[in-house]
Image: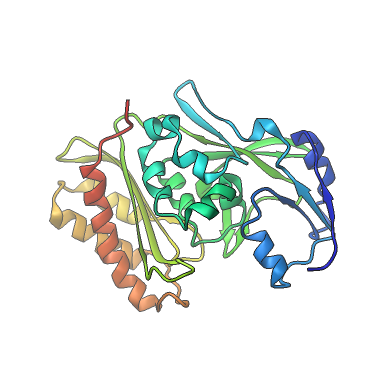
Length: 288
């Protein structure tokens, strides 16, 4: 790796002040699980890294007014073992148990999992399905972005170079049920060929509202409103789930990569969307 400067600000405002919208060689770093690999491979050569580890108010988990607020530098392992997270959105807990390995989860942060823009990440589709948003801090002030609108393309987000995600907010889920399934070869890198997250509000016979999100097989985590519309229009049964899976496979803009061809992933979408919907109905809502 080439030499670089390491800054360790104590506040969010100070950290934002050290970033430069016109200089892409200055980057924030929290867990660094992805960034360090890029640096070792020579893909990224920073002149300055702004460490977020010393900013204490960015690593908390709390609920207020029915919402779950997660500090952006909270390690994924802390989320995994948090009773607050499990009670508010148990699908997050279940998802984290299948995410990479405990060594990575001990270091990687929730903000980094979003800001990196990698479509293979597990948390982004789950948070989209839960209707979450991020709070972003920049030199011009604070703004809120739905997680569904955060991603601009393959490894791209709408964040400016001098903006930081300060927290992730998950709204109250009520009686909604959610599930996340992925298809992976279980190879050493464990990148999924497909991730599917669903969240539904159902009385057991009809679906009042639904979110269906696919990732890994697409350039960015993507909601499928056409499939959601079919789900809301039908009666809950296996035939409906298969119909929604077919619609999702036609609607999603799929890409081929090392995990499989677009045609292969299309078949995966058919199967896994239906499975995820069944799994969601088998799960309870938020735990109390």
